[in-house]
Image 1 (cartoon, rainbow, N blue to C red):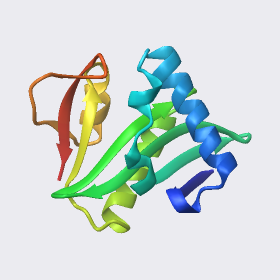
Image 2 (image 1 turned 90 degrees about the horizontal axis):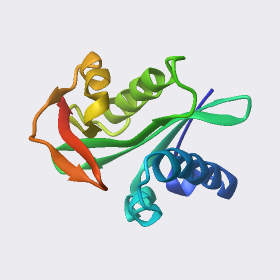
Image 3 (image 1 turned 135 degrees about the vertical axis):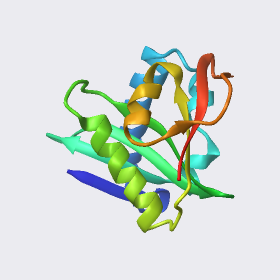
Image 4 (image 1 turned 90 degrees about the vertical axis):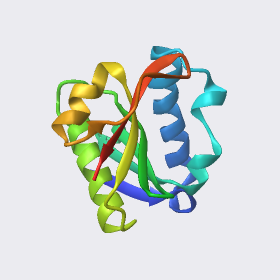
Length: 141
């Protein structure tokens, strides 16, 4: 089941569960510092959660910015079930249909560039370090 809410619409428990799953994936697994993972952009984002059995199994956040929309913090807690693809399709649809943005930007970790290319994104930058992990900017438009 998908839940799509702005920050103001989230319950405190929903935001806690989002923080919990992001900490699990980004802080514990990928060793990103917690202070770099949580940021002010959460306050201005739409949070997209795919849940199964009451647990978040995939998540992304998106927000409008100058020149289009940005999708980030994409994660899955259960791999190999297509949840990442589902949450990305929902995020892309939200950016286009609700935010009214045709142009979408992501900062993709290099090891998952192929995943985003399957969704139609193309690499538009050189490698750059974001929180100790190599990324490339990718765009869909």
